[in-house]
Amino acid sequence: MKCVQVVGQGIPTRMSDDDAFVMVHLLGDGQYCPKSVWRKHVAHMATLSAQYPDYSGYSKLTKSDHEWLRKKGLR
Image (cartoon, rainbow, N blue to C red):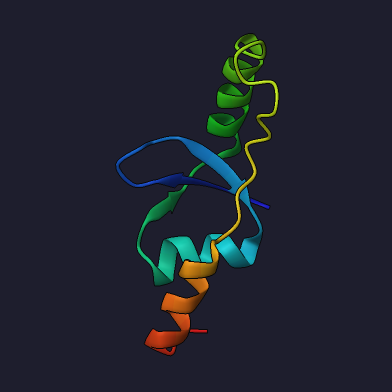
């Protein structure tokens, strides 16, 4: 699992190594972040747990992301 921050949003998310590689290197929509950024974000979200009871912080590429990659011949 890797910590990735989506460019322009700055919100860290955890995703598989493969999805993180695609997000950062192939799509160019993110950057890797250190675990300390992830831990700080999780601690902050825990304080807001009443507002976000289903928050897990883990992400996956969407079906449209995979289709775009296939069209570009990257996957």
